[in-house]
Image 1 (tube, rainbow, N blue to C red):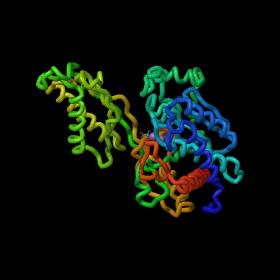
Image 2: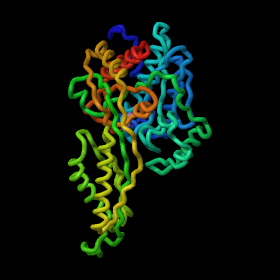
Image 3: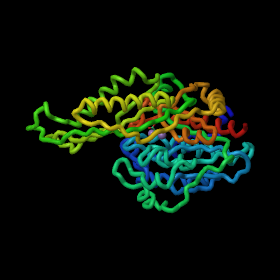
Image 4: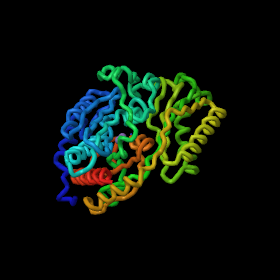
Length: 410
Ligand code: HGY
Ligand code: MN
Ligand code: MN
């Protein structure tokens, strides 16, 4: 199918994305944390749209939304997520869900195209309650105990309470049916500036990083900020700051070419200007697509904590909170996306790794998986100014649907 022949309705794709942008609208982005009212509204919005594509809609016991097809033949699973980071972008997640919906609308009703596209929206990809809980639940990797322990990272709300308030309590969680899908394809904004800076339209994802998360605690002595001499303080806040600087000084020597590390949140207790912090905590993460790199950085982190504790005056404790396996995308998907790009995007595609985590890295554990990126303006994401041009959104949709068609045609 050439560009002018593409059956994809670009205006419909943009209209659907704009409709989703209205749920939890915040400046030019959205604030749609997992199980918030706007997030739940967007799940129900999707469930009401799925029959347009000949799909039966189900919202399961963890908040995943599925559109399943009764059309005979092979099935391709496609989707992404609908919740957002706090006060973040309108496309991170919804772009992949709407591309999947458009692919289903175009392909499932075309008797000339074998098989069908089934749609999934994975709950909590953004990690408000846990690590890729929705897609991990689908592959059977989330126990009831993990759900019992899950808490909202922003306010400590138990996930069980959120599920109950969403009307999902006791509802079964849907798991993958072996052999049903030839694979999983996810479209996503790049969230970086490689495509934009290269004048490219499509990223063909080769690998997805593993993300390892840590809680690092610093234990000192709370005391009066005015009467406690500098020489005798055990300032947990200062210990944390020094540790962050030491990480930045020592990690580069043994990291990989694309390794990244981030301190995303710092907490000082009791957090008052006239009190020396007795406790401090940082949430820290390391990302790389090679687990061996992460493992040696983790060993260094523990060694640095032990040295800092031995030297004093504060104690430093590193706790690993989460690990995530990196994933390789399937060559069959590379070829389908590149062929579709050659036909519909002037071949302006580039094979590239993903520095962001995605549900595709979970699905890749049970079936062939692939990802397609579209450009992010200024490379910005996880911020309300995140955006992609309408032209790039529509081109990406056309390439995505054509890639789905090629994958189903075999
Ligand atoms: O953090 C990530 O990589 C993803 O965007 N949640
Ligand atoms: Mn995302
Ligand atoms: Mn994200």
